[in-house]
Length: 400
Image 1 (cartoon, rainbow, N blue to C red):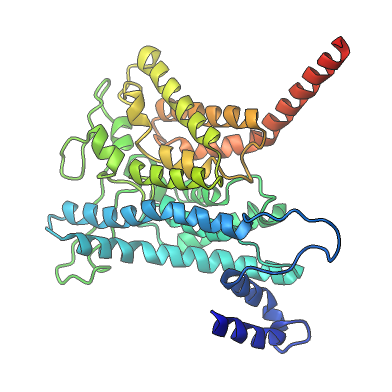
Image 2 (image 1 turned 90 degrees about the vertical axis):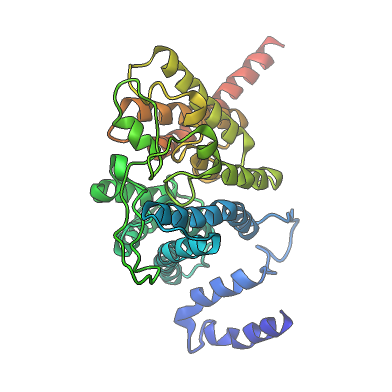
């Protein structure tokens, strides 16, 4: 690394003010910050409290926590594809297919998103923030695997500009940027994101380079099946028509988006986030609690529909519920900040997600809309909690 550091220091003047490549200073700064920890402080004098956890380390920790879901999702893409077309493929063949299917979306998300952030940072004469490193990693995990790359590019550009930069950049955005990308696709291109057919189609054999090209399979996700099932029929089936049980959904042997199928892999990521203090366990737990209680209420008093009769514990492992609870709801920028507020914020996300699932059969997912809705109320929840504490302390002081 010393050799790389010396090389970076040698070319740094070229990208600094007055250098030949000064217009690319923000790009150089992003690369330098990614490779090395900055050794500068805000002021030359005065007391500073230093902590080992900075934005860069936080983002890297989140990416590490996402890796189990990403790797499992890549394998599952290939697994579902080869099962659907009736080809007996090995583990590495399945994983390689999934890798080649996911990688283009990952590259497009990073190229478009980081490209826009670098250009804006250069125009504003600011450093490139590390926030998009996580957003770019999240996008291919939550969009349909067969989404055209130009759609991913347009949705990513829209989200970065209108959900982040117009508010001031990293740390100022009101909405979760990755979810805005998915929401843009959902409303702008509903035929690719609508209802029961979403997240199941696999890329055709061209991506794998097989000689016998086979068209991609298309079918309903487990939640999509429930939304269109006969009243009271809660049976779910995989691509071959075999019934799907709780264990299948928990481990992730089901059709779905790349990062959302395996609750087990998601929980491994949750352990990393909680152990490092990067994400709030209170938000995670309250989201699951809110979802479980609401699903149980629908089980007891809900309408006579298949999804209303789905056991509460199966709601928690289907669709994007677990992924949203662990990686989306806990976004420190858009979530509630107060300790009591975190409980309220997470609980309401779980409640709204299940309500949308059960009462809106046209959109059986629900988690995306629940989180985006509560993003709007996060600051209001904190304000109410703070005001309640102020009144409580004033009342206590007056009584004394």
